[in-house]
Length: 165
Image 1 (cartoon, rainbow, N blue to C red):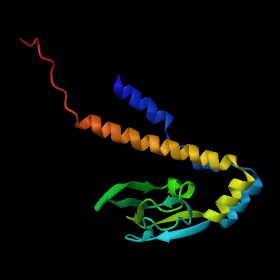
Image 2: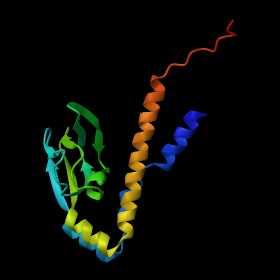
Image 3: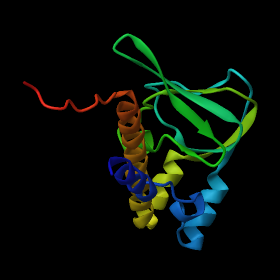
Image 4: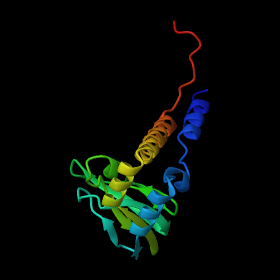
């Protein structure tokens, strides 16, 4: 029963296609397209560092990257970023500082939509910000669901006792 609820939550929290998330009027889309920057990376390259100012929204085109963070003197691996994923919505939509370091694990390419261009797009078409905030909420929900599943997997159930005397 509980696993069915987790499965339903995961369906609701499934990532939306990038084209849907960035759907906007043609003039705003053209402005974003013109401002997009291509970033090529090689194994070991750091795309950005934790706590640096966020320079934009990243979309992984090809390759494989690892999210790493330092929290309370502990180094954590937060997960991967693969082709088709948006990277650092929280930094872009939040306090504009990266919440983790992104390191390339293979050769690849990413596209960056610069912060200033996105701010202009949010001003010209406010629903775009809401679409991205919705995706951030789904991202948080997916992470919470994965943590819940991991926690449940680690719990061992004891067989019920017949009757205690």
